[in-house]
Amino acid sequence: MSTFKPKNPVAAWIDHRLPIFTFLNHEMNEYPTPKNLNYFWNFGSLAGVALVTMIVTGILLAMQYTPHVDYAFSSVERIMRDVNSGWLIRYVHMNMASFFFIVVYIHMLRGLYYGSYKEPRELLWQLGVLIFLLMMATAFMGYVLPWGQMSFWGATVITNLFSALPIVGEPIVTWLWGGFSVDNPTLNRFFALHYLLPFIIAAVVVLHIVALHRFGSNNPVGIDMKGPQDSIPFHPYYTLKDAFGLGVFFMAFAVFLFWAPNYMGHPDNYIPADPLSTPAHIVPEWYFLPFYAILRAIPDKLGGVIAMFGAIAILFVLPWLDRSKVRSANYRPLYRFFFWIFAINGIFLGWLGGQPAEEPYVTMSQIATAYYFFHFLILLPFILPRIEKTKPLPASISEAVMGGGNAGQPAQAMEKAE
Image (cartoon, rainbow, N blue to C red):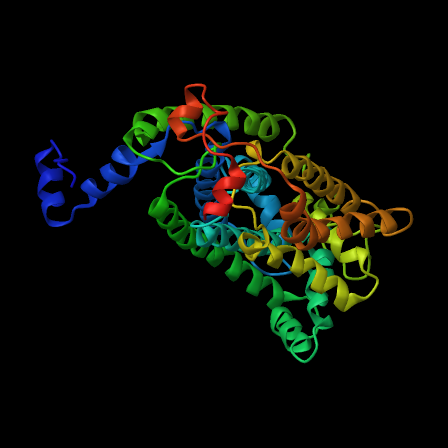
């Protein structure tokens, strides 16, 4: 039981009646953390900082934005030109969206590499995938709000995809549009949902942190802490490490913010939306491109929609597809090899999503899509369990940190024992 007592008399009075300071001290200061976490564990806190930044700047932008098809584009231009520091607020919001996805993608790849989705952290992983799905919905709706050419036509193409769903497809499209085409009711709906969803994301993030603290963080070795010798307090060790990572993050962010603020955007979105003029090449934001490539890889519209949503849905059941008892790829040489193929394939899909829907890109997208699903549905559950020979795991985290990483039980023996 914690013996923490606030030194400030006002804080002590509050804490006696509502132990919020004791709770924060336990969760942020005394919280035992594996002593071997590397800088890849910074990306969770970076994602939290990005979310808070997006919410704050989004509220400021909402005070000046007009959600109407006749005024939306000009209201954004007014924010950029006439509102005090409006250009800065909008560029922070716009570029932080991209950086938010960058840190989340790295955060998820770290989880895949080190097996952070495995028992007993299955629900922690699933809540993370849910956050990712909500982020995608929020980002798509936010991309529509400037009401430029790519905003309008992106909304038209993506919302039309739901019409491929039998029975429920047409009602969903009609509800999203608020009528029979992308128009003012659509913009109003997207603005309301874009404002609401970040707060839902924040609520799911809280659940994500609660689930994380239930069993503690995973670590590069992939074994649980055996005692106090394997852990250190979160503060000051990891607060300082996170602070350093945050400094590097903001330096990289500042480069884009002040020198290349439109680098990750599309120039067509600086043209007002025109329903009578279709852009030559309609593409979503870069962070949607891998899934856009999967969508276009399937010739059938319904099949493409199923494949695109299936690419995300498959992540929810990943803890049960990977049957290995060893978490970390550091002790799974064969899995590590295929992990890097998977990561390169994901980047390749992103590149293909930005190319025209013509040969040879369509065939290449089909091959890359086939490998994406092969990795999860065939390789992990059926091939690797039969042929993979894992390395011996250390007896404890301390042993691995102190240089005894090759000692301990062979991983195969641990799997049989379990």
